[in-house]
Image (cartoon, rainbow, N blue to C red; front, side, top):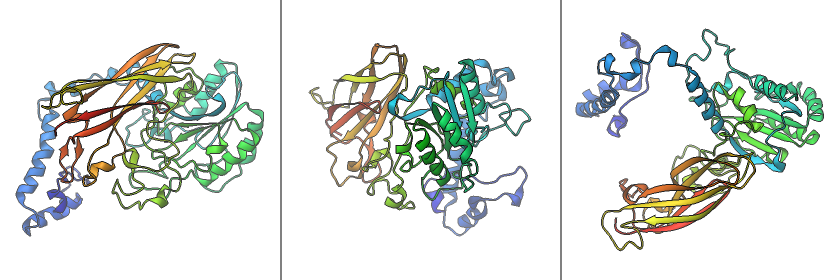
Length: 458
């Protein structure tokens, strides 16, 4: 009853066609009784149903099938070459390079590489979950290129050498595979360690008790680093991974999430500098291991010290939201400028807020063409402490991906609409634009350029 009245219109529950009493769920089981007892009005249920059906109407699900474009997509479009290529590009752009000491990346595919770690032969963990059939009539996903196969293709085409051993599982205590990897690390120019998590550690119904990398992987990485310090750590994961125990034992760290069926092919190419449209930025803050002790994990108050997410966290994380390097080149940000119209400082007008444009000059200062991603943030400077929004540290209002040749520059612009861009919740939960000064920041994860804007009126 309380959930319905609070606006939770839909419950995800088991529903079988003609299931009758076999269907189960909190709403199915208890809502009729709640209505009869007067805990919730029938009109509240009607409202929730209207909201749910309105979405289906907007999607066209009640229109004739002939009028619905998604019912008329021919089978040959599925998995067509343009779509596959787009998926590969998206995969590459989801990789995030967090550390690259001594320019260990890009790899030299003509050298001798040691591929080690629990995911070297993976074809399934990379897929994540909530997916359909990837390989037709093949639950083993045999059509998916494993990381080992992808690295083998790249090294063979460059006359390089690839050594490979799993070394350990994602977790556990079996260290019998360690010895084999020690010899490989000694012989190789660079070690690529494919580690991280899997769905036994994290899923919709399985929360981790901490964010640490499993102990057995930490143990193996630390031992390998004493043999060969040139280690590139590749992490498959959903949530962030605490890196306290391995950060100083590897030269490069790459976050790839659960990257999908093309990662086995695309990752080796990106690591070897063969994907010019690759690399992105972190979509979450990567905390230190102690975050699960610093916070009450059952208290979801975002602003309570030290704060949660990039918007409120005031601690010192390993990597900030928006971090990300490019192994091919470097970029600079300069000449930040602000063009403002009415309702902003200097306009001399106090009517409805107008439009402003924040721009920055981005330059590729390296020797290779590559992509860069810039992110625009705002932070309020004058909100009264009586308003919860005063604790906001920063908030994203735009981002852009660009491609620049070596030495090329371009202006990247972000549009600001005063009545919309800076909307925050007031003490009553209403979205408002507070008057006052706002700090504007554009960053690529390494450089930050700033401007200040002032909004008059409300």
